[in-house]
Image 1 (tube, rainbow, N blue to C red):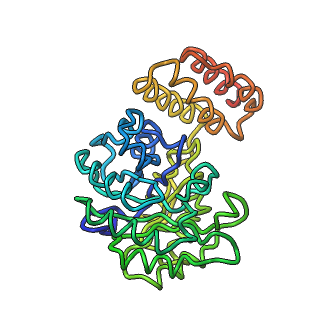
Image 2 (tube, rainbow, N blue to C red):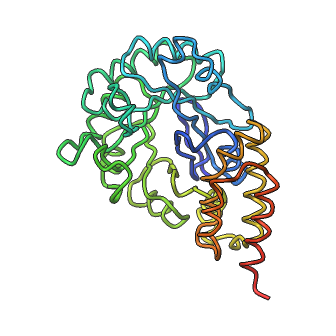
Length: 326
């Protein structure tokens, strides 16, 4: 497969896993890596939380060698705290430090960080410039199309990020106002690609191998990033790799295979966080894994009471029986 280089970090040109707070934890990321995700990014790390010595924040910075090439993603609204946090991340030896300027959730935007920075490009440029000075690795930026439909500024914004020293920019083709509704505008991604000379990562509405190939073709982006399209389907990265390489798809996973993958994902989460917390955090993943299967509605109702791995094993057996033709 072809590769791209982000500040000297080589990444296979298939598909990366998008950073997703409260979803793409280490177990989730490693599952996607096993099925071919070319590049992984951490959940959002608060720059101020790191600077203030918050233990939970620091725990998010640990790098598992199996995740490389791997980026630690910071968010913050002021250059001094992001600069200091970037310096503090050096001891964890990430391959890349990514600055989040695309998160649309109110609690992030309300503090002036995430996609709120799309409204203050001068501040955003200073943040990146200072982060680059303090990081021992390439610095990248994740942005949106703009704040709303009346302020689509991603191409100009991306130029400023490049001038500040960013080694790549990832573009989600929705505005902050859209949140995750409507359609992603791939034309914005194409416009950013035309505007800068650094690598551009395209993100938004890639939910199949065919959609991934289409994004590459229509936008000219250097790498595709998959987010919600991976929910309950870590094997989407396997499908993308096969399709890009050979123009075909691997055999569709059977219900039994999907349930075994779900159980493996659960065990990985339990190994990391213990059975109680692991099972609680696995509940939403289970709903995604069984989507579209016969009996999924009944299982969704049971998910709120999942506390033990043995319960999920029983549910998996029942799903296999319900969906297997006699």
